[in-house]
Length: 404
Image (cartoon, rainbow, N blue to C red; front, side, top):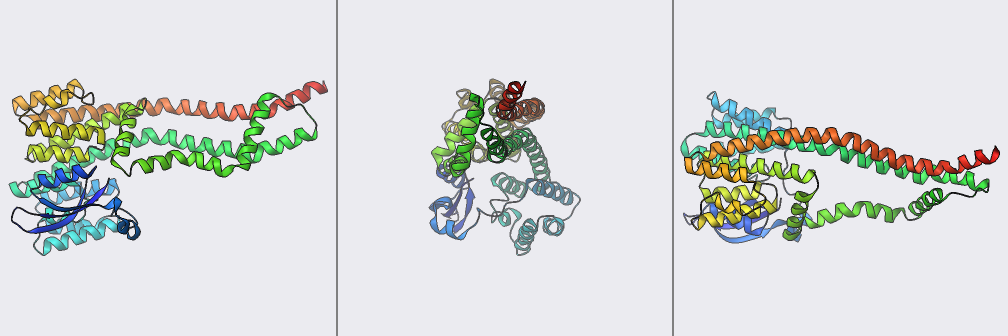
């Protein structure tokens, strides 16, 4: 996700600087204004030449499983009466990630110097996102930090589990596709030329399928750099699209329209929307600020844009459910549950049920998809390799029949 460096004025008149993650420039401005900041300077770090030359990454990145374990352990330690400074310092000493260990040690040092937990973690926006920071702030303000830490632990555990189910459904076809490319390359570059040399020595008339395979083999061996460029072109195009707002929007829209996988990604986004919304609502985060945060962490700019439009409608006096009715991205069930929750004053409870439903749906769909893709990918691999082998072996069958 793009990062922005900002300079802003707090309500007290004090100048502050920092970094924030957002889908695009307008989302960053919305998030900062929701925090009561008056922006004086905002710089997109992905567009900064100086930033590109000096930095090798967008900041420290911690594996989701390490962060999920940290959330659960922090909640447990704080709940049994260990103060937050000692709890963070203890966890910094036992985490497996060296980078995360250093970050947690710095956070503990900052709190030791008198800063609140929420202030100390804002230095690391790529590790502690806006959901985490705002829920901690709400917990500190209400004196209910133990409950907020428990909610965060549950939130990240379910988020991590859903993400892993999506990965498990996608990893098999990706591995099989890579394996297919490797096998076909070996056949075309090493196996086919040797067999062709034998057939040419026998002065055989080659069948059409064999001539086609030989032609492809010759092209791959002579223009291997073009073949490599063609294979890498889709990945380079995706990277280029991610670097600008319109490209990211088009890419996220295309993801939602991919057969089968698009539905899975859509349900995952709805699950994340519902879980994040209900967590922030339960924490007492103001509605407009909450919608800004959810739009930036939902993981899809198309859905994020709908949420920002809903924020504007709510700001103009609309109910929370009405703006979402106009979008095909939010099914009637989700909108209906939001409307019921808004009327009954149990919006967090209703969206918690929606999140549970979609998480279970993603779980089941991932298992079905994985079970369905395995035989399909095996058949595709067998057809491709079998076609090449059969085309190469056809002259041998002709030779045998001639000998008879």
